[in-house]
Length: 346
Image (cartoon, rainbow, N blue to C red):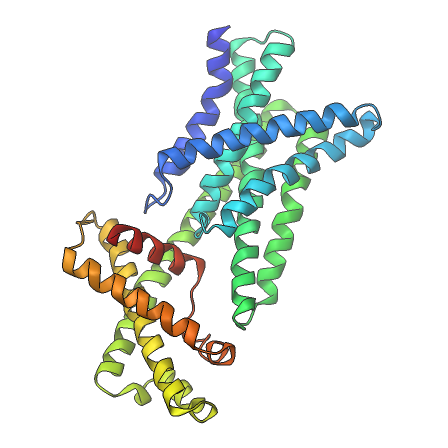
């Protein structure tokens, strides 16, 4: 019996470990990962309770389609909470969080099947554990990506930045694809080997595409964005801001504000750039394996800049903050990097 349990649970643990190892920046600790697995198990308990209540009023034909949708909806609750708390800022984060919560769900589901169902042979338990783990973790990963997109697009909308129609379509596709794949998996009676190959291929493709897309996005966020910000800081310090596209934009709104307010705007932009460069540079050092402790004097300087940044942010009017939104763009990744920098300084 013990061997059968190991066979059913091993694929779940293997997949979670795999996606965790692929996290280049170790944004999620092992403790956080374990908490997410437990959250997934809690969502499984909630779903089983809902199914117990609904079994008396829902026919089997309807439940085959309703229950997979309910499962993905319940798992979406902690995933949205993680996205809103900026625990998922890159696509690989959403894959890890989705895999952990979906894995926790499938662990408990497999245990229930082993305890309450008919005895399974070792091979059957291993096969079923792998198949169920893949479908739960893959669908949860899609929902997690959708949640991350929703929060990201909401952040852009709040500061008046343009939201692409294609991004909204991606969210819609992910939210439809996850429950649809789950429903198809539960209802299509295919050859078990063919079904396993289809699921494994889909999940492996999702992971590979995500990793490649994420690497490009991180490269664009760190390398290209960092170069532009360093150049802009140099232009401000040398009094040549007007020679840059950002400076020309700021000068175009200069007449809309009193001189002292525009001065605050320039100071606010400079502090934002300096904090952003410091936080991104720390990420680059972490990637290169050179994550050394920050010196005491540098820590205090960063904390002082952040304090002044907050004072200026409160002082600026809503119209002033809206005007500089195209320049001061705090995406979830920027906020996450800054929070980690401040945590290290404190």
